[in-house]
Image 1 (cartoon, rainbow, N blue to C red):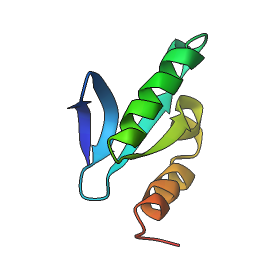
Image 2: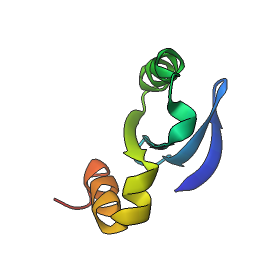
Image 3: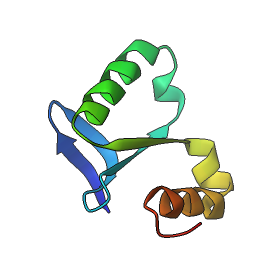
Length: 78
């Protein structure tokens, strides 16, 4: 897993290149930016990545569930 990784014109929060998975953390900075986030996600998916969006609060309050979701998205855990 790499952090702050460039993909095209965007820098993603986290990426697992092996599994073509981008993990984006969404917090207050994403309020009112739905159009931008949608454009960004379309670019990433068209480049062959799956995008997992995770709320900052989920990371802070329920990290085990977030990690489980990442492993599941990578096909490592069920």
